[in-house]
Amino acid sequence: MRRFFVSDVLEGEFDLPRDESRHLAKVLRARVGDVVELVDGRGGRFQATLIVVSPSQCSAEVVRSGSDPAITPQLTLAIAPTKKTDRLEWFLEKACEIGVTRVQPIWTRRSERRVEKPERWNRVLIEAMKQCQDSWLPELEPALDFKEFLERYSAFKGLHAIAHCPVEEGLSSSIRTPFWDALNPGEDAVVCIGPEGDFAASEIESATAKGWLPVTFGDRRLRTETAALYAVQAFQLKQQSRNTRRL
Figure: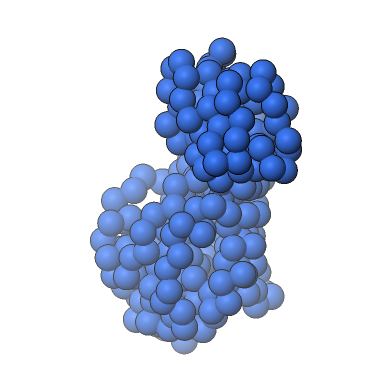
């Protein structure tokens, strides 16, 4: 059964969003009486019967509902948007499929692209959520300046990690912990990934001064989106011993 995203599913009869209505009517050629599955992105799952089918508007009536528990532990991935937006969208799609809880775009000193596309990025996440048969939509937060990001997220519980390339010896961040070793099964994590030119030394020092742990993903130099996806995959693999719902 195909899944469709409806952020606010109402008991009884209600209208589906126009984009989902168009897909149902024109692509899937749905008919009145067909049963579809809806998710609200917050764990809710609903089976509904179509009562009106039109390219401009489809209506449905909920016949059964259920919910999936919240995903734990949680992973927040902060990333400096890449210069080429298609690379960031590729990351969003794959990160949602693998299992990221929250995505926080950040502007850093060396960010080459400062254009935010929240509607487009959220649509990528929605399509990925439906593709992987999930009912929880990753939270896409408004972009923050790196300084504001540190102030807000340093209070989050769990691991706080900043991934970066080697820096000058003598700095507090010159010693980096392997990311895999820093992860603990069952513990939330916030991981930040810098832009193509990496974080500036002053940004790394600001993070470590607030208790963030410098980490490394190995000897290879990774693209921003590759490093971010590595972090999501490593986090989920570390949870396998916990036998979480997603794994």
